[in-house]
Length: 131
Image (cartoon, rainbow, N blue to C red; front, side, top):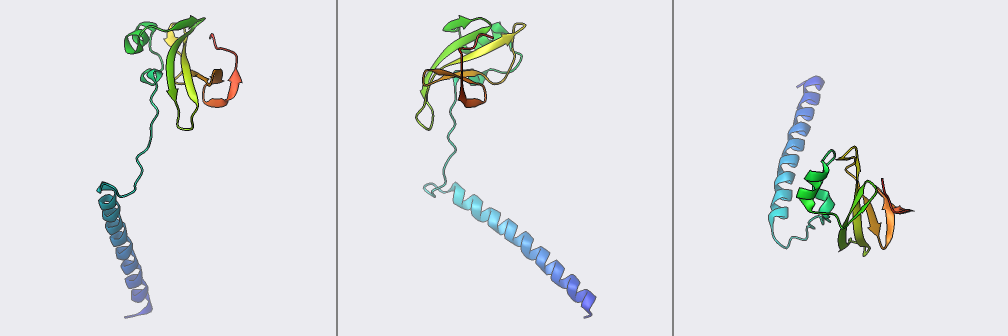
């Protein structure tokens, strides 16, 4: 066997070994994660009432989906949440805001530990939103 064929044989053997490792490793991971008590953590998800809403919903669709708001502030509807997040903060309420009669964002304002926060930025304290 010449040097060219030797390189080809080594490359082919490396490829076959890599594929076998991926297939065998995938089977091992699948097997381990399917066993109970294997120590794998399931992801925690915090679901709020307003998570059922989507961009563009009308006020009537929002009301059918999550009910009447606790308070109306300008173009925003406030819903009580009263849940604790995974680090111990209390989410008191959420406000969904409308533009031209429709939900204008998939993000909403949260009242966290008694202070209103900007959508997507739980650290930034803001005045209570009205639009």
